[in-house]
Image 1 (cartoon, rainbow, N blue to C red):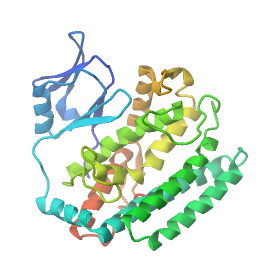
Image 2 (spheres, rainbow, N blue to C red):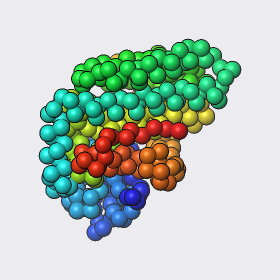
Image 3 (cartoon, rainbow, N blue to C red):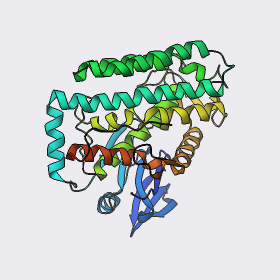
Length: 343
């Protein structure tokens, strides 16, 4: 199993990244603010405006360190990669399956099954921990509906139909998400999922963390030799990493939603850390981003027993483990893709 190394998140908007031998430098106002050896990193995620030097980009490509550029709000912009690596036969198999309706539907069904069951698990855990809280009846109803959606999945044999079921399930899940916020309810009121831009602090946190997860999923897919842009559930679109979006669907509830709720309910982040623009868009202050990134990094270092591999791994390696299982399935080593299911 791959070793989980550090991810360097550059949130200083005026920072510039450069190379000094085998080291990554973060420079601001012509002063070196941070220095780290490249061998200590597995990825660099930049929210800065000035970018990075060509020498650093070359170093990242040579050392297989993912270098991603995001907007200040967390929207994916670009990813620097070196020569195409991986088994060309594996990628050709991926493309052939993506062009076929039946096999694409099989993979899409697995991704959506994982997402529905994990959303259901998040809600069931809330009921176990907060039996006396408001909304338990509504949450119980959604739990039952999500089980119905999961059981109905086998009746859908086209990708479009599976997408529709996934959308219905997501709407049900988010319809009761506000009940899961038990602290700071007025400041973090959740009235449904919105993005591009997020219109409230809770959606801002979710979008930010979903972006970080998408970056990790894309890097994991490339590591095992798959093309992140060619998916089965999400339609192909120029610049869109469709397979990374496919993979992250089943991981959203466990890796992101639970963390976002913890940050809010334990008051690690507060409403003071958000700014509402004239357009109505809600953005995070730099300190809030730092808190979220620190919590994300800490979460990734925790260990779990993978439900399919039955092996102890760090949470941050879950995207890589699932990408590996996906590659094995495409090669024919597994009869079907096993989605990650939280316990």
